[in-house]
Image 1: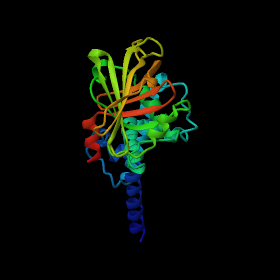
Image 2: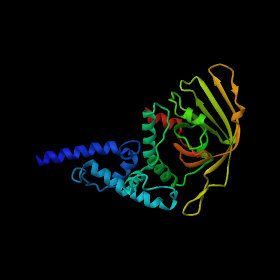
Image 3: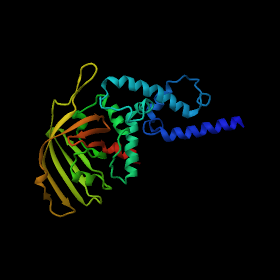
Image 4: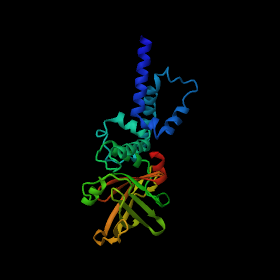
Length: 285
């Protein structure tokens, strides 16, 4: 009976691990597998307490090590209390990119594709952990197409942005960069995809709001943004120009960017996550 009870406990814990740790078993499985491959050849999962115990060891060892390495470059605004204490921050630090991607995909499915996100705490901690990796704006990485997968409107976001942001979407909004001409175009479709709102933006990297790595390397974060034109077209009807949307003096801060995802914050406080189209498609299969 004791053996049966012990086995049952291991099964329950293993199932809990599968549910609670997307970084170890979902989109971040490669990181977990790489860590597991470094364990001794004679390591016995069952004898060591099952996959739940293995997951906890992974989070404790890798998460804590990653957090300690990033402490010097973490944004000062990060609140350990808001994320639930050091144990929780260690879990997120094990693979913050995988945790953020899982949060994004879950949010898309729960919001019917709108991508609107209102909560704080966890996502802010994940963004801070990614920001500490010192991967800011890069003209090489940013060039090309991006699809918006999460938006959390800021306190000062325009009402039109808030209304469009919370609508369910069958087609993802996009933000496509043309580095050669130092411009990008934001494209938002109406919920059924019949109407298209486009905003043309000229940008320029600026020196303000930069970071430094531990060895003194400058990490560019901010680009200035001027909306030079905007238009709306419904189906095949004539395109309507929207000159009142033209605006100068905005900016966009690149908190994190790699070849798959980018995380930015606008001058009105909105937080946005974009995926490369091919990466997005691979996750939504």
